[in-house]
Amino acid sequence: MTFNLRNGNDAWERRRPINSACLSATNPDIIGTQEGFYNQIKDIAASQPQYAWIGTGRDGGSRGEFMAVFYKIERFEPLEFDHFWLSDTPNEIASSTWGNACRRMVTWVKFRDLHTGKDFYFWNTHLDHQSQFAREKSAELISQRVQSLGTDLPIILVGDFNAYSHQNKTYEILINGGFTDAWTTAEQHIGPNFASFHSYGTPIPDGPHIDWILSKGPVKSHDIQIVNFSQNGQYPSDHFPIMATVSLNNS
Image (cartoon, rainbow, N blue to C red):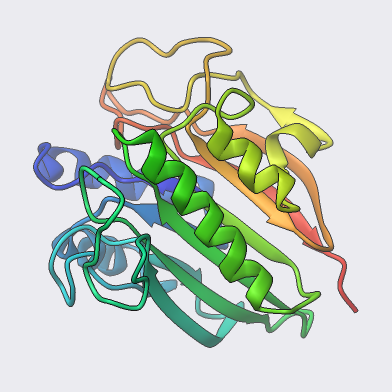
């Protein structure tokens, strides 16, 4: 699942139980979250004890928004993890050099699936919402960093890319870099298709997606869905989560 939580400035206490109910109803194995503050991440961890999480604030430590990765404790073992910033100095905490409106970063984890013994990478990011130049540079850096792994293991990349899939050079950079889009390759689409960003308004049928689930290497996408969960007219966020079922075909 990729899930922009909407930061805590927007009535988190009202949305918190809806968020928890959404995760309980969908029960994803791994979640790449974007935009959550430290208190939100802790609240999710407290309400969903089947998950552990890895992340850091984009402003350093517990400060700023997190690209936290939640994973089921009984299913996955993290073997490695790291963070880097989307800038010309990616190893410098809280760096920003491309005219971003906000500091932007990546959190990634190398997991072992304890049920199958297979290893894979899960990358999570949130690109800038204003600067197209920064989005393109970010996509290039992500592609370079993935390439530098020098691995044949499956890689799953999720996030809020703040760019329309199929309609933006940011998307083209990642696809040309060897990623495939689960929305395009999935064998089945479950439920209606809406724009992934709804801003608490009326969902837009067949609208554009700025939230993506991409993969590289031996990953097969079986199904994918827009999770249009709400309770009493309240959505858990201003984005719909997107969730896919995939299999890893590495030996």
